[in-house]
Image 1: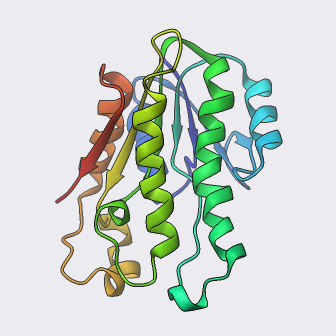
Image 2: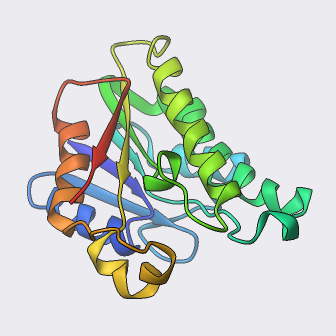
Image 3: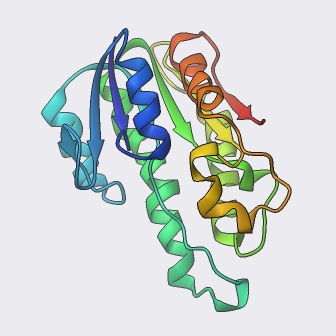
Length: 200
């Protein structure tokens, strides 16, 4: 398969790319690195990315940001960071990318534990992750040409444990191979409309 990974240079994306590249033709896209550059928060940039590469068999989005801060400190614009980037970035990848997918192709989005089990300072990030879950379940009913869509939702990842452990007291880090397995399940399997939850 020809697979596009948006965010293929990140903590999770690099491991997913390495696994998929063993058996597939993988193209990586990122803001400042990868085979193709893309501004995930800009729909025109997303359109240009797809125009430049043509048809693919699978699209994987492991990108997007959201502001972490105390709720009292968050402004309206702070919330829009996550809405424009992680939420609408992934929605636009589906909206635009479906036209560049082969029949029976797949789209895999990314969320995280905050959708189900938020922690302090994550009202914006949790909101965005939860919205993506609802979007995946709804849009799966409407995608044409047997296109499938799922989201991988992982707990605190092993490779980011030291950086984020203070925010997630008591969370057991998930081995990276288990998270990568979730993406493989979405891409190479037959399921659709699923939130693939990965825990330790």
